[in-house]
Amino acid sequence: MKGAPLNAAAMIYAKVVSFATGIIVARVIGATQYGMFNVARSVLESCSIVSPLGLDLAMQRHLGSAPEHLSARLRQLRFFRLVTFSLAIIPPALAATGFNSYVEQFIYRYPDFANVLLVTLIALPFATDIAVLGGAYRGILNPAPFMLANFVLQPSVRLIIMGLLFVIGYRLWAVVVATCASYIISWAVLAMLARKDMAGDDPHDRQDWADIRSVLLYSPYLGASLVFVVWIRSADSLFLGHFGSAKDVGQYAAILMIAQLIGLIGEALGQTLGARVALRYRNNELTAMEHLLTENVRRITLVSAPIFAAILFWGNRIDLVLGPTFAVDARVVALVSARFFLQTIFGYSGFALSMTGWHARETTLLGCGFLLSVTLCWVLVPLFGQLGAALASFATMSMINLVRYAVVLRMFRIRIIGMPVAAAIALALTTAGVVWLLLRPIDNRTLAFTVFEAAVFLVLFAGTAWVLLITDEDRDAVSELFGHFADWPG
Image (cartoon, rainbow, N blue to C red; front, side):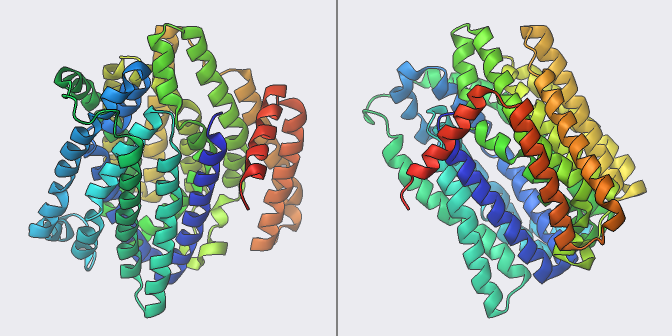
């Protein structure tokens, strides 16, 4: 749990600010332009997963698995960063030479999309270096600088710049420029901190090129795994953008924005998990590795299950917040939220492969998932629109996570999901369902009453879970967490 309070606070802050920013953006520019921006952002995210060459994950394994060689390996970081930053310049350079116009003419036929894509892609080299530095900071078990730069500074800068440009009179371009500028500014701050935190003891020592080559041999597998994961996540939006309208993408993006809240605490708890799994496996401590993964999933479920249940029963009311152009299908909300919850619970079992030398199997599994995702999206999105996109994504993520879990169970005899996880899920869904059914006769579908219903559910779940599901160790961890917050200045 070391660092968890700061991680949780930073990520909660980022989600709250991003959520508030998303609401403002959606209301100001509407579903159509919101959809166009999200297509460009999806392209940026897809490219930003390829450009680090897997080093954002490899640095966690490389630095975390050999603390006795930490100083020497930190000196290698500058070389890795230079290679990936140079690679990340290629996509915006191609866009500047006219490739963005081809995309607008033949793939995403939205007015002025070429210019939106160009400005968005300018952020790519900086987003790439942030990812590599983030992996390095997690590898040395000190994610705080990365968390503050990426999850506090970046959304804050984006909101401030965007607000100023809104006041001046810009709309879509306020969002695009603010997003690009936020990456550049947060990168500058993080790079400055990294010069002090990760310089190594003696920068004049010779590089160990054999060690560097060993990283470059396995990092593409880890990178491919991330590429497949992000492309799988983005395939639904990208195919929907091609076969549907910008408004369809805007509504779908709003659902994704809500559903991402499900994995919020899980991301905070898992920031250093990869490095810790790598160290335990190297020391042949399989029982400790199983306990680490099992406890992580159990705690994630306790906080993620109620968020999933609330979105499942009341998430289709986002039009009450974003406006009537964001009226969405409850079936789409259910499938998208179920996909995010499934990934939140099962996703960290992937560390049992990617951090233990079995990265090729993880990559192969995700590659098969990517092919399945493309096939399903190609078939279902033209037929069913948003529902087809959600169904394709849910089916793909279900296949990947269940097969991966079976592989880990067979290889390591590690059972990560147990009865405590099932009990938390059952309690959340049952409590939310009962509240929804009991209040349904008087439900007037207003924002105030929806907040009231969700609040009643969350209070009932928290009280019941505290008595039935929370262990003494959990209570001590909660007390310690709030103790950390109480000790912070101000």
